[in-house]
Image (tube, rainbow, N blue to C red; front, side, top):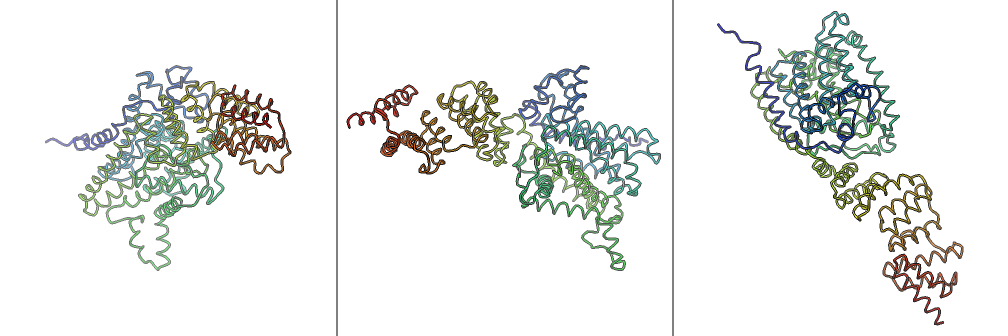
Length: 640
């Protein structure tokens, strides 16, 4: 008689099927290029990962890089470059293999927590096909997501699989080592000790105090690394100021939970970046986050509440709608209710490091939900088991299929977006048009491709969204310089040298006005006025510079900001009216220009010869229309 092998065809088909579906969903993004968003910093321009040498390894581990200390993340790229250089698909396939390994480990963990293999497979399938995970696989720089998850899950499996001997058992120490590896890959894995306690208490029925004591070494390591990284962020200005308006810091935390819960449940309009709420307003997203935290928190603590309510009600049964979250669960299904509670706890805890308790550089990003979304796999497996235990196996399978198809299609569509920098940022501005950084990054990509006119349009939209941010203003200046045939490098160098000197910037502004570089001239001038707020004399001088450049409207705007000239000294008042006359003439208002110049001459009389000398100077600067105007006024003075 032939007995079934533990490696039966049926057991093999599940992981192979999940892997095949995952590959199919992610395949559109596995080609393409290394992106100009962090891939250049981490890989293309980072010579430390271009060869696997002792010097490079020492440098990688010896100091923080790219505002973080993630040596294993960087070290992983040396394997790629050693095998196939900077071939982008190779890096992405490496990410994919790590993702598939994480799926296998996740399935093993769910089974270890008491869920049947089929239910665990259902949960892993929903996790595998979720569009939120596309970024973590097809974006090379996001490798730390699947790599750190592999270390986390491996550590958890070893920890939960250890016997009552605890720390006297080698696998417990190996578990701690894998946790250390996770921390050296991505800092937000500091939550693993809390997740280990949650798994032991909620699913393995261990007492809280005993479980917390057992996980204490993990917690100590997490605290030490967490404090080091926060200090590193502060040193590199990676922590943003806390919002002062609206709901302040609390609203920002609630928005983080609301945003990531929303994208986990409704994964549409996904983008690499999102608009940043700098005001900390308490709006709909914050309200959703509050509901998520309160709702999931109730799921976690419900058994204790029902026990207390039961005592208060004289032993009455718990409220029926929440009964599935009780410790005992439905008859014959001891693991499903506990797993649902674990899913709630997992999401709440795993999101803590990126929930802006310490405001991070980008307040929300899809990849922040990668580890927290393990909660989806746990909840999916628990619900599958719940339906299966009630004789609704076909319904459970139909539900998984009904969810998997749209998730796979959305993932395939999202994956294609990540093939090139241009496709990524065009998608980003389409789905998140209010994102300053998306327009800025699209401009950078277009400029790199030599499409300066389109780049300038993207930069203008970024400036319109955040007028006070210098990055887009500087980039717009450089793109406009290139569009006009100038070399952007000397322009950028001149800006860098003059950036903290108002006088140097004013001089630059005048040079660029005369060189027909109005965008760069405006940037230098506005920066100078930020450093030294202008008085009436400075405004009039600025208006004069712009009339020399033929920009009458710009000059008039400066003069309008001066206000009434009545209180000025007569000499300054005469200068005001003379510059106004020039600006009005350039704007096509000749009669008004004539009256303004007559006022100036009345305040500070000048001879016809002096006006002619001014006309020759203007003609030498290329302002023939102003020169003719001055000649005409001089002729009238001669005729009097």
